[in-house]
Structures are given as structure tokens and as C-alpha cells.
Length: 508
Image 1 (tube, rainbow, N blue to C red):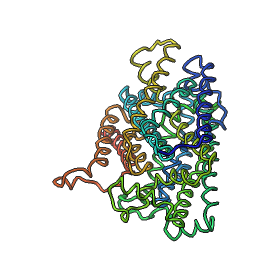
Image 2: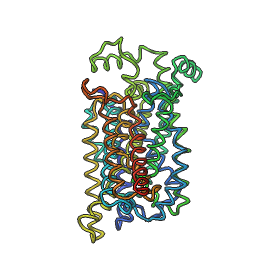
Image 3: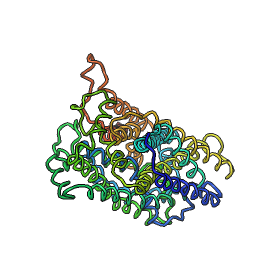
Image 4: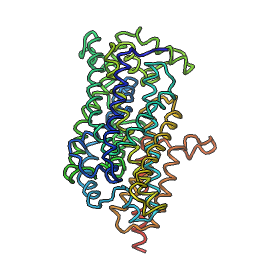
């Protein structure tokens, strides 16, 4: 079993203690659910922008992006390139819409347009997405710390999960945002430190990285051909990124709730662009880290041999058949364990933990808010006192944390963090963006059209997701669409079906 040096372990313990201390300190200021969920609308725009950036820059980015560029190329970076397009629509239309409505829940509008079922459907999809996101992040933490400490992955998830649950539950949205501001700085510096350590140990430095990357087609953004959307081309990733980011900025409670924490609509809109400005170059940095690691081990193949042998044994395949994609997610933790000096390792682990904790804390808080606003106050106790509402928020935060840990444990063994998260996000989104757009843009659409459109949309999503598993007798029902097209097709199916049915009813 590997053990972290005392100095690195001390740094990690101090970091955990600091996050919990923030939660305890801010818990004294939570006098009601409004302060707990939207921080009384007193967050400055720059802090909100840093909070959004920290949420995007999760542990999936920290480990998944280098893993993809190490194992393949920069095709997945196209996701980041789609962000400005989604940000323009969100800042121009969605932020004013939510700020004017004054509804903390992102799904109140759906109930007003189509009834309680629409609000409940969207809420369920949102919770499933949060569980998938948080579970994937828990798994990424465990993957890293297991490589560094040797402790079991479930034990790591439970330990880190308890810490995150405590400071999120106690501090509320204010704790989430202000800790994310600190975490955004820590993880950005951590990424720069990792790149410096790779380059400083590489003969030829940046020039060797560029030349090796070019020679092995590592900087490719994917094919620009438009041919059936069956492969991970530039356009498949761009469309996926656009719809996912529009889903994030436009209807994800995780983000909508924080629009209300801003002092005004202008600050809320600016925070989105601040997130984009920070995330784009830092996302590129993480892909470059993966390419740099490929160049490093290309120059020193003997150093990565133990990892290759371990992965080959675990997967039960011959070493000669092993590809970089088979161990891409493990290469950064492996480099950290063997090449990072004592003392700096603790700082980098703290950066990875901050990348994970920022996303999960906001996910737990927003999920708890959805449960309070969309379920408890609507169906169980409309006249709940402030104290009763706070108890519900505390309990819901804790339950979501426990479920996320369980989800993470269930993910042990997946091949690619980024691929797993993207696939789950596409499925669990359930096309709720299409339903929202139907309510917002198709004013003639009524409840019956929305119901039919959602049923058809869910069936299409299930078809794209599971048709490849159909027996040979039903091979004609299989689809060749890439898994990342799930949210694209699902969203368009619901919106266009509802709009078409509304038009037919009007003309009948």
C-alpha cells in the first residue's frame, strides 16, 4: 500500500478543515430558506462568475480531459468551443426571464404552462442528472486517491462525501459560492503546476510536446464531415456541447438558482460570460496536459510500463493489445504518484478535491432546493415554517450526498470518465430542454401536445440508448447514431413534435 508523506497529508487535512470551517461560519447567518438557497440576492457578479467557472471545472475536467487527449486527441475540446454560443442565448434571453419571474425553482414555469406533471418530470430528470454528475465525480476522486494512497475506492468516496455533505448542509448557497471562488483559484494553480512539472522533466520541453503531438495526430478536433452523425466528429461534439450547455445555462436548477443570488440581472448575465472566458483557456490547458503526458511517456516509455502491466492484468488482455485509451484516466494520478515532489503533491490533490467539491456542493444544494420547492411545499406542507423548511433542506442535502456516493461506487470500472458522464447526461436530461423551449417559443402548444411530445421524445431517447442491445432478429431497429446525439435528438423531437401538433390542432 502506498502512503502519502506526512506533509502532503497535512495539507489535505487542512484543506478539508478549512472547507468545513467555512460551512460552520456561514451557518450562523442562515436564518431562513431564502438565505440558504439564494444567499438573499447579495452575491457580487464576479464571485458568481467564478462560482460558475468552478462548477464547470469539475474533477471530470481535471482527470477526464487529460485522459481523453492522452488516449485519443482533442476532439472533446469542441465541447468547450460550443460554450459561447449557448452563453449568448442564455444571457440574452434566459437570465432576464428567470430574474423577472422571481421563481427560485427553474421548473415553476413548466407547471404554469403545462401542469404539475411537467414540473415533476423536469425535476426528476434534474435529480437524475445531478446524481450522475456527482457520482462520476466521486468516482474520479476515488480513482486518483486510490492510485496515491492504496485505500479502497468506496472508503475514499465515503470519507470525502461526508466532508462535502457537512459544509454544504451547514453553509447553504453562500458557502457553496464563496468556497467555489477559493476552489476556482486552487484548481487553476494546480493545473499550471502539473504542466510545469511535466515540461520541466521533459527533454525538449514545449517543442517536443508539439512535435510529438503533431506526429501522433493528438491535436485533431475530429473529422469535419457530416455523414450520419454516427461517429464522434467535430459536429457531433459541437451539437452535443451546445445543447448540454444550453441545458446547463437555461434550465438546470444548479445554475438558475444562482442567477437569483446576483444583485441584479446585469451581474447575472455577466457571470455567464465570465465563466466562459475563464473556462475556455483552462479547458485547453487540461487537454494540453494530456498531450504533454503522452509526450512525456513517449520519451520515457519504461516509466509507464508498470501502469500498463497493471491495467492489462486487470482487464485480462495482452500487454501488446493495450492502447493509451485503456489507461488514459489513470495516467495523471500515476504521474502524480511517481514524479511530483513531496509537499507539492498535497497541493495538487487539494486542487483535484476542490475541483470535485465545488461541483458537488452546488449540486447538493440545488437538489435540496428543488425538493423543498417542487415537492415538499407543493405536496406536503404549503405553510411550513422557516425552521421546518430548513430541516427539509438539511435532510435533502444529506440524502442527495448519500445517493451520489452510492452512484459513484456503482460506477467503479468504467473505461472513460468523460464518456461515461456525457452519455449519462444525454440520457437523463430526458429532453427537458425541448419541453422548456416548447413552453417558451410555441405559445399555441397546450398540455395535450406537450404530453404526447414528451412521450414520443422519451421513446426516442430510449431507442437511441438501448437499440444496439436488440437481438439480431430486430437488427433493423438498431440505430447508428452516436450516443452524444441523444440529447440533441431528444430535445428536437419534443420541441418539433409539440409545435407540429399545436399547428395541426390550430388548422383543424
